Image (cartoon, rainbow, N blue to C red; front, side, top):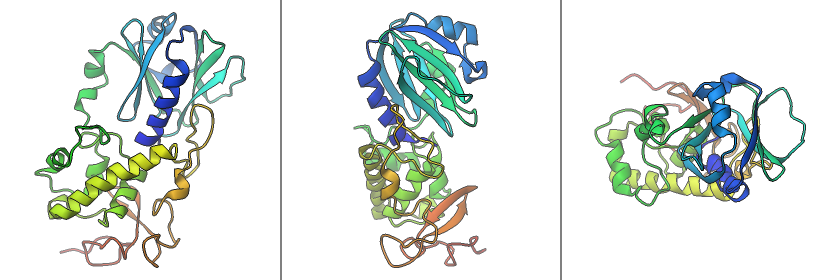
Length: 290
């Protein structure tokens, strides 16, 4: 799934490529990709609009239009969003093609069909997309250590599921949660209320560091490698990963081997030597009963 670094990479490239461009036509191959408003109103609302700015909130791309409305794209699991010359052939997985006035087109493609798009007024970003319910942006200037600590205050759950909760911190997914926890030397099953002040501070720094690195390497094309930037190129951060999807490979912090476990129903990658299991047992098995 594209996470904050991947979506931010797309946002930055789009901002340079499409700001000021006018939408001259909309071809909707799969009406179900439009979640708001109805497909006809979506097409009419986009056509003729200029793209004034490209923003991001969590994993959402938000293109502000000259009308004041926002064209919103969420890539979900395996969505792809391309900037291509007009006339390039598209395949059966293409859901939406938006023509621009500079002989280019924006193409929304999705193999599994979960990607979605919206046309929303500023107020509908709150009422329809519920963007106000999302947690703070982890790379924003106001995401201080005090802010991070406050988001976890009073919680007692395992730390990894909390990092994946978009209402706690926005934009973090499975890959960057595993990488941040490894860097902070914290086991994903640790209960958040057992973390010491130095551990919380280390995790705060690790979250920001791995997200910034992910952006610097233009995202990670891990697993099936379906993530691509708007030019169709893979990211490079997968070559820098320390634990994610490295089961059985040597840990890059010690001489142990990375193991895969289940945490909250998510495949999770840990080094049992660098990240002590809170159960006191084998990190590859379920926690021991207390």
